[in-house]
Image (cartoon, rainbow, N blue to C red; front, top):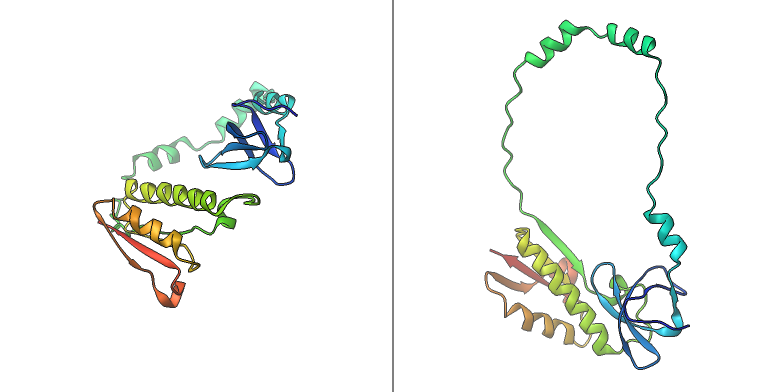
Length: 195
């Protein structure tokens, strides 16, 4: 099957798909998922999305509106107690009690099996690249939305992902970080505090 850059594809043996953005040789294509992550995928495991399926998805659904007998409608309207409706409308609205804002916190698991439907055939470098892009996207979102804290679960492993995360965190201003709670995460998580 021949593919071109820009083709919409689905994964053959897994749910999901995306858009082809580049090719790595003849056997591998870079696929941009719906969440913006770009992953390498074996060309033999891709299929074109059906044009007919896309057309059906884009067509608006037709809704039939039932015809109402005007006499029945008028009889129903006459049953509404107008005085009661007016009294209810004239009641003063209750004062809103301001609630103190609770800090927003989040937890992001960066284990590759939680980020991609499959990482089969990916090198360690490609896996870490996907994890770091997901990390950056989640941290930027937390900063933009005024989170107070976000915990990144990276696991223990050989420590390469943790080292890369710390290097990226050192490029940000207005944040601090530390090892997350040992009782909750063991040694495999970093807590980021956003000021």
